Image 1 (cartoon, rainbow, N blue to C red):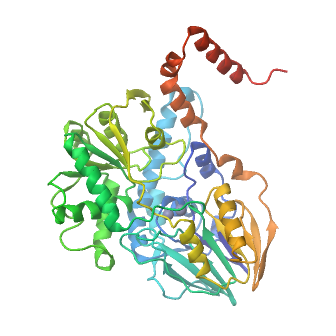
Image 2 (cartoon, protein in one colour; image 1 turned 45 degrees about the horizontal axis):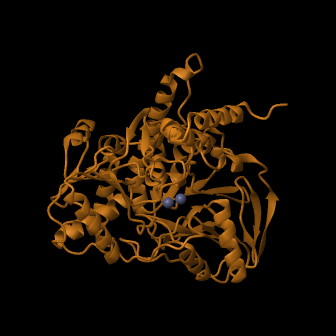
Length: 503
Ligand SMILES: [Zn+2]
Ligand SMILES: [Zn+2]
């Protein structure tokens, strides 16, 4: 989100497009503005969909500061170089593919070095403290209760009052008090990720009981409990709950491997700020004697021979990282359990497993699924519909426009309709990527320039993952048809569909 003020330019967040591979291609496009003309960035939090294009911004000529909270600065120090490393590795892998033979090599969006350079731009400011990121614009950060260091951004610009929610945390979030911010704004920009959903409102105590049950059942089988997690936040929430269960004697001693160097580093930052975190209870948490932080890939591979352990590995939706080799070694074992504790987006490997696929392709190889597939869906990182509505209503009066962002189109529409029915703001906007608005005091925002097509089309399901899933199950699905005539007919229909409409 770019804010322009009489020759001053401020950017709120600078995220990497994430999700389907089609959507990720947007990251290669040039910025819609000249990076060298941006005076400063205010960053709401260290998730890659908010900070992941900062290295590209810096590499393209941005020389200002990136304002954020102290924990966010500490997280950026290793997350941004890591994001660069991921870009370099992905690009190298794609360049090696045989179907690219003879084509010019692809360039990474940015490198590890670009990531390190961008992290050096971070400048920390505590919550609820006014600062002036650029002359004439005053800003304050407010606890958003979403992940460690997350904040909403309040701006005061020549009498105009603006608030950017950033990502907002749910009720019953471990570690943080509920989100806060002042009331009375001209314009509010609010996220809508779960604007059409109601979370199961489990308390921390209820979640721990669910987790205790899952761990006990999995351990009773003698196999491993594999938990795909994101390195930042969900890992630490689980470690908090597992350590608390162990400390309370509610679980037998079980080795817990945190097989993600990134998760290890993020946990260190949590340790650094532990004094200010809620729900930590008594006893050792992140440095619990049962916890083993796995660094080297040799040690990670050694876990393939382990049984009767809990293994947390990234990525949370199984799209990359060490979780893939743990899935490969455990999916076919009847005594293993795969436990999902996070949202699995459509088209991801995690979603395919959770949806009950009997065969899974991982990095070009197929395995059968015999492991138990389980889910706890009461861990949440975002506010749900009710949470968003009450956060918005607590900001009243909003005399200009309320912008709904950061959600799928139908989610935003559902939330918009509900907010309109409640009279939450007299003007509710659902901006498209690339839209440009004029913001005035006390009156509805006006669209200066629309975006046209752009990225809208790219935001949808991903044909590549659908293809992988189809290929993995094709022979089995064909065999399941009653006759060979039916199998031939199905193949003929697919062939015809691929030939497209005939003229
Ligand atoms: Zn986030
Ligand atoms: Zn986000």
